[in-house]
Length: 142
Image (cartoon, rainbow, N blue to C red; front, side):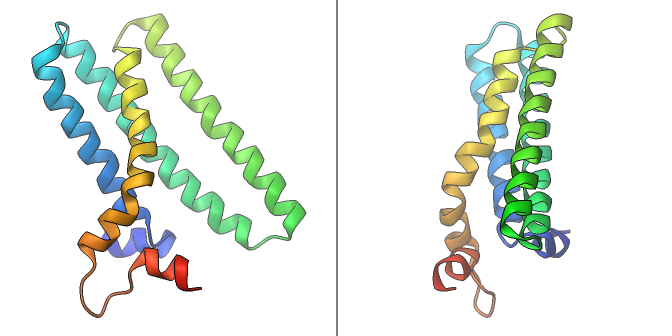
């Protein structure tokens, strides 16, 4: 599975790991600080799944944009970016209307993507093994 994710994008496994770790940490914190634990958990993991979808979609979008000319790549990337954010708005809207899960917890789960993106170079260094290319070095050196 990790090899397949690396085929899509070298940084993707670390990014997904960070999103899930952030979700687990938020879940643990929620056990102590939240009254509606079920609503919090449902919202959080819907947010985490949304963040995972966004990371996968972003990786595929970047791969397809690289194969285009500059104008086509910009237009495609912008269009796909708008689609990603519309999906987040729709997911949060559904949670607010149906009250199935906590929309703030879902937002926290989605923010796991941002936190993971910032922490990804650290994960890449920690998971770097001998004989394996480090994704952060690939981006810096080339």
